[in-house]
Image (cartoon, rainbow, N blue to C red):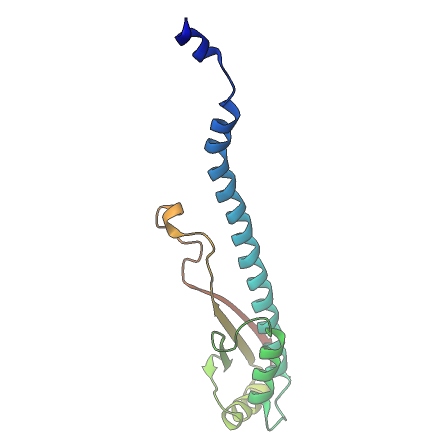
Length: 153
């Protein structure tokens, strides 16, 4: 009789259901947060690459084109830590790393109708522990990267 009344007692059912469902909802919430962070970082990086490619493409006659372009990219991605930000500037696929090398390459590229590109990358920060996803990381390569190309003007 006592056993039969215990089976009919539903007083702890809600707590048990909550204990089963809550971890799933928590992982879902973390997944939404992770997606939002990665999406935001991708948008900011793409904007930085766009600004950088445009600045580099119009810097043909500028003696400080490389420095100005890097400054513009850092300004467009000011929400990121500058020590994690990697900026690569190239003219027609050849990397330039100084004002003089960029200016020379831009002058040549302009006469040949070539392009200038900016590539910006930043470490991807994961909120979800890899253990929750069976070792699969949301940030597969470890870095988020955006690259844009503009014709030299």
